[in-house]
Length: 111
Image 1 (spheres, rainbow, N blue to C red):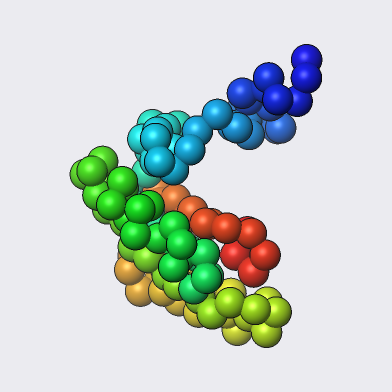
Image 2: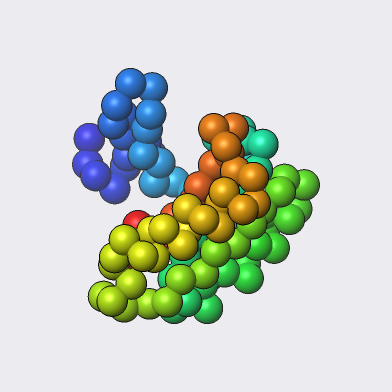
């Protein structure tokens, strides 16, 4: 198979990496379907959030699920334990637990 024809690639156990979904169309609905959770936390850096954040939140609200958003500063200085701790504290403060899902939007610092 050519890489461009792959929709899903198995990675571990029953997990797969999906390539066929877009934020503009069905990514959020498919995420909620494949990863059912009590509530969700979106983590994004400020640059990625400025581009995709509003669309993601809007699409997510349409699912009726609970979404919290944590935006972190962009850049290399954010890649440290302090920021990781801030994200963990944010999630603990908002009562996230093992029935919750954390979504990393973007790469670099967040992904």
